[in-house]
View 1: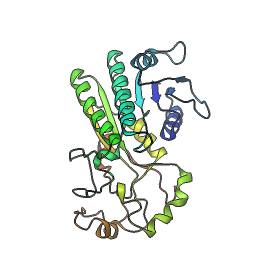
View 2: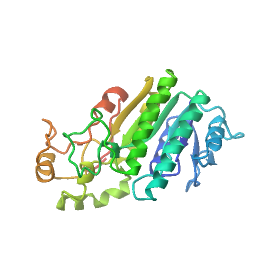
View 3: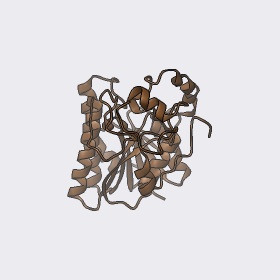
View 4: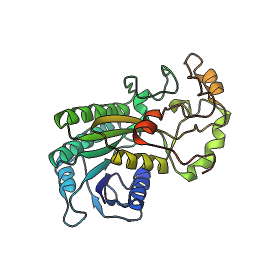
Length: 283
């Protein structure tokens, strides 16, 4: 049984992550600025932009959990446009530094955190170099939010250089969805440009949680980045048709002309054993 802190455990992805970890035998401490709607594990209200609070909550707060063995860092301003750009950049970058540094000092060497699909160049006003897109080309942040995530990835590399025993896995999550969100998906087919901004991708919160758990359990050292999406797109229309209409000059890999995700999850499948189980098409 592993004791794990989940920052941002009250949010959309955080709720699913906490539920999944608890169901697989983990002990969980939810750390967030707001209490959860329903408390199913210990909770400590914490401002992670304050290093003292970040350090103390990972060191242990009274009897809330005990010695922490792993960290899942999901807390952040979750998307561009939620707050002014400078505030988004400050909160996301500073909180990520604080939890990485606190974990390093406390020798918590198993860290999984939420990067973002936006690092790939979203909203793709400049077309991607190829599709499906993957982790092999340099980050192309187009917003302060995306820049904060790219800098988090660079910080992870340097923290792991300082401590070769440290594992920091960044998961570039696609647009997080819950089953209730799927009712509106059929309406996307009418206009291919409605969801072109992330190549028609999404991630079911339950599959995102699976990816987090598999990343925690992966026998990896150092900093690694994985794109995490569901196995299919949000569209009924095939990829070949969508790409020809919206991105006619972008090469589409052979075998990707159906409804397969255009945010490649092959690296996550290969190294984490990630296997999406859910789809808006049923299941």
